[in-house]
Length: 153
Image (cartoon, one colour):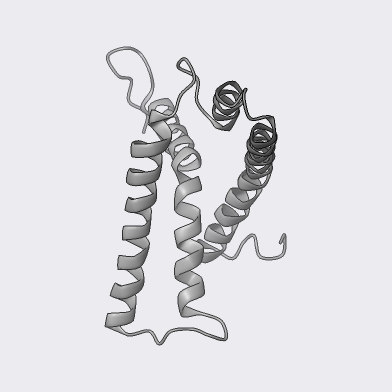
């Protein structure tokens, strides 16, 4: 049943926009949530699986929760967000700061700029592989909900 709202938009369009917005949020925030899901699955399956007991489930969930809290709070909020180069952030901004700050010691500067370039390469590699892993994780999640995609992958 289609109901026209006060602004003239049908409810189906509003629902579709809400679903699309939720899906976009899942893509944005799904990156940091993908690794704990794989960790949870790995903890209870495979050759070195933990027995599925109440204590083990709570222990693994606690370890995942606190590792996420420590990484997000301590690393990202407290450390990474404070490091900036005139308002610019990221590994390239930090490399520029190092390059300017070590003019008197060229050998140390060369090594630290090299580490910055390596960090930038790792960042670009992560940017290439993360979307693929996220899509595969989403398809794997659909496989749990329905087996219609089973022959496709």
